Image 1 (spheres, helix red, strand yellow):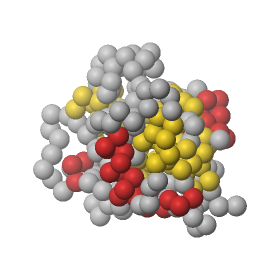
Image 2 (tube, rainbow, N blue to C red):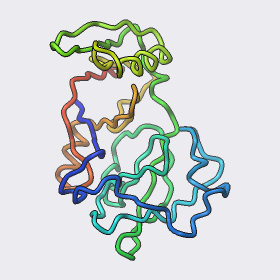
Image 3 (cartoon, one colour):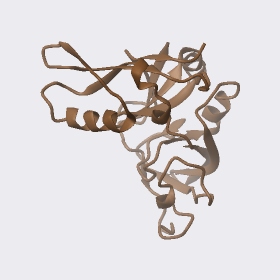
Image 4 (tube, one colour):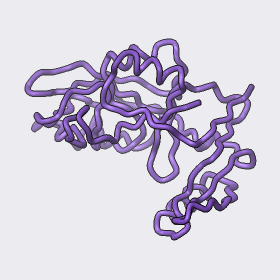
Length: 222
């Protein structure tokens, strides 16, 4: 069983301020080789990015997962408490970079978890199941044969009366680890946490996200 780790929230956790990051600071060098603008793909980075500093809105809260819009690729801006909680769990292939969050003129140590693999490339489409649910709640099976076709039909579904493309089952090949935290994209991106990790995050009372139910079943190798 998995939960959606949803940090696209607007509630009392972030004081109804979203996104939380308002700037990278007045002196940030946007055109340098270290700029976050150069984090353009989910592959290993050749140059360590300048992640000093993510300035939060004074009206928000410094949560353990921060909603930011300056980096477009998949990854998570998390506190040390959150990062420490991942110890012993299997995380999607990633690189960890030190980051700094500035909140009400105080600096806090965070890190950026930069995913270096896109798991859509691992999906075994003949063993996976996709569908659309129209306004009447009637499910229609959609055959998907490739990542490209999946993304194309997902985007088309945004403006279709058939409803958005959804995944009922995602199957992974034999060489795939049993991830406890990973991200998948149809149109937008969603992070998924195993039940074991979700319980850990809840017990530690970490903030900045909800753990939502998902109807998607993930099939990992035995």
